[in-house]
Image (cartoon, rainbow, N blue to C red; front, side, top):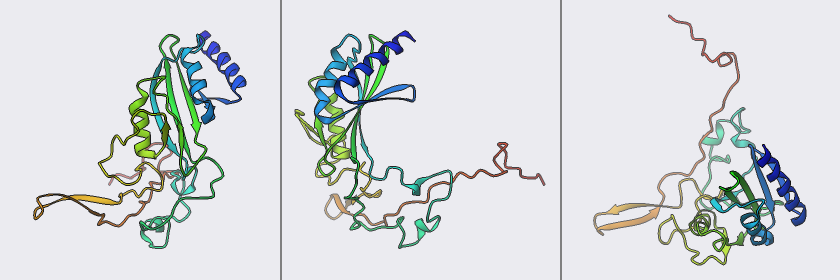
Length: 238
């Protein structure tokens, strides 16, 4: 409890100095900073005695394009119900030419989240940076602070298209050579753009446009009625 209070006090002081926000959720602190503050704040979190976050556990990219959209609520029926998955004129059916990007987004679309660990103080911290440009999201690389950031940043670049300025080797990490797009972006088709198969006549693997229809499946709806209140389905035995 003493270490938690000490960390809270140190983070509050840092957030006031750097004019950034501090939140406490899921039994963990989240420090939200601006892209220009990345190197200076993260250096303090690594080196200062009150923090000593000497280990970078992970770097995660986030795409907020579809954030809080009601179509994927699971505790009640969605706005268009079952038709969204079977009707050709609903959001659940689309073509590869559809433009699902909301160009008028008022809030930042992409964020980078750093998960830090202090072995010395047995503490964890989450640091979040919102990218300022939705068309070309970018933040500074932290490879010089933590060597483990190298592949984490390449992964975020590959899957989300987030560029890390100053990275020594900014290449894709997980997708194939010549892959087009970033598969974890919300506007990337669930079935992808191409499919591969072996062509006997050419004796090699070839790429072709996908042959299945892209569609969004209807999410499971959790219903609260008398069948589930007591944990049984109230089926009478014959």
